[in-house]
Length: 147
Image (tube, rainbow, N blue to C red; front, side, top):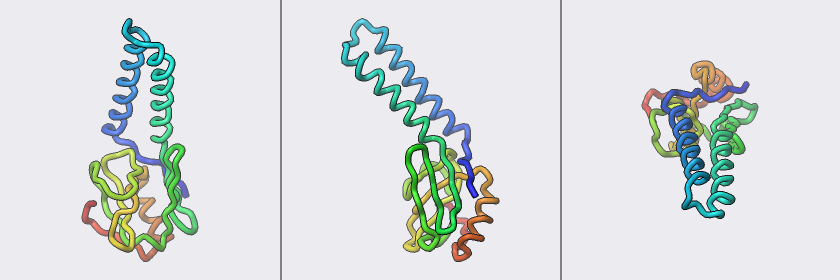
């Protein structure tokens, strides 16, 4: 079963802000008298490619496979086996630790058997995701302490 990433207004605002700043920089580079050919030929296309790359990496999904959780973020993919997972917690804010693959400021943090966060995600249907994860990996303990 595949779940898309939940998006909140904060993360959408950050993405829109990155695009606006990028577009303003491009306008400056291509309209300024002080821009060099290197800036217009080199920097402009690189900035566009970077913005497209950032946008592509914002499309995230989480798939509960037979042997583990497959997390996809644009061109990147991560796999987390169920047997390395020990507990599931609420995740809030921009806290570090683990692989952060969420497009919201609230989500789920899954810890490994050593007690370290291995992944932070934000599935759209969080309760349904938790139920499906509990069926696939009944040994995972649900905790209410935020990570």
